Image (tube, rainbow, N blue to C red; front, side, top):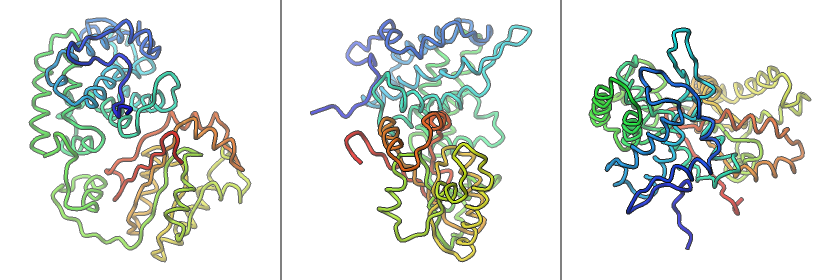
Amino acid sequence: MLSSIWALPHTPAPPSFQLDWDSILADFPWLRTLADVPQDPIYHAEGDVLTHTRLVATSLVDMPGWRTLSEQERATVFAAALLHDIAKPPCTQVAADGRVSSPGHARLGARIVHELLFAGAAMPPPPLGIRAAIAGLVRHHGLPLWFWDKEDPARVVSAASFASRLDHVALLAESDVRGRICMDAAELLERIALFGSFCEELACWDHPRAFASDHSRLHYFRSPGSDPSYAAFDDTVCTVTLMAGLPGAGKDTWIHEHMANLPVVSLDEVRRELRISPTGNQGRVVATARARARDYLRHRQSFVWNATNLTRALRSQLIDFFTGYHARVRIVYVEAPFATVLLRNRHRQYPVPQTVIERFVTKLELPDPTEAHEVTWVEHREGAE
C-alpha cells in the first residue's frame, strides 16, 4: 500500500531528524538561486538568503514543536521553511546606504510555490490541499512579527487563518528568527508569543475563525470596520457560480455535470462570437459578458460565470459586481495535473497557446472562504478524469 504522506525528498524524519543539507541543495536547483542574494546587514548578519534558509531549516528541525507534529504536518512546514524566501531574488533591493529590503517577497513567494510544486517537473507534485498549505505558510510567514502594525490586526489575522494554520505559521516564524543573526531576536520572539495569544483570543489558532454564517463571514471581510460577531441578514436572491481554473482543467465538464440546468456566461464563447483571440484586447469581451450577466442579475436568475479567474483581484471585481445585485457567490476552482492540462488543451477545438497557460500558472492565487459565500476546490489527480 502506497503512503498517503507527501514530503519533499530528504525531509528529516525520526528518530534522528537528521538534516542532509548537501543532498537537499543538490536535488533542488531552485534553492541555489538564493545563493549570493544579499540581506540586510543589521537584521540578517548571518549572510545571504541561502545561508539564512539553511539556518532556518536547521532551527526548525531542532524545535520540539515541529518534531511533535504529525508526519504530514512536519513535511508541510519543512517544505515551507525551504521555500519561505524563494522570491527574495527578484524582490531584493539594495539602497545607497547598503540597507537591504525585499518588499512583496511573501506574496510573490506564494505564487512561486504554485509554479514550482504544480508545474515544476523536478519534484513530485503534492495534492492541492498540501500545496495550498505550503503557499499559505510562505505568504504569511512574516505575519507574527508585524501583525500588530497592521491597520486592523484582527481582520488580517482572521483572514490569514483561512489560508494557513496559524500555529504552523508561528512555528515557521520562530524558526525564521532563530535562523538569523540580529540584535532584536528576543523582541521578535516576544512578538511571536503575543501573536499566539492574539490568535487564541480570536479563536483561530489552529483552525479558521468562525462566523455566524457564510453571509456574515463575507460581510465582515468585504466591509471594513464591521463587527466580526455581527449576524448579517442574508438578502441574497440568486446564486452566481464563479468558475476558476486553468484552460483544460475541466471547468466545462464540471459545469455540464453539475450545472447543466443553468445559463452560462462563458468568456471563451464570447471571444469566439466576437472573433477576438485570447491574446487580443479583452475589453469588448468582458463588456459583453458583463451585460449578459447583468440581465440575469436583474431578473434574479442564477447562472454560471465561466472563465479562468486565477487572481484574487479579478475575482474581487466580479464579486463586487454580483453582490451589488444581492447575489450569493460560490467559487468553484477546478484543477487537473499540469501535464493533463497541457494535453487536454492541445486536443481542444480552440486551444490556448501554451505560453499563455504557463503565464497563467505564475499568476495563480487559490480562492479561499474570505472571498465568497462558498468556495469549492475540485481536484482531479493522475489517473482520474
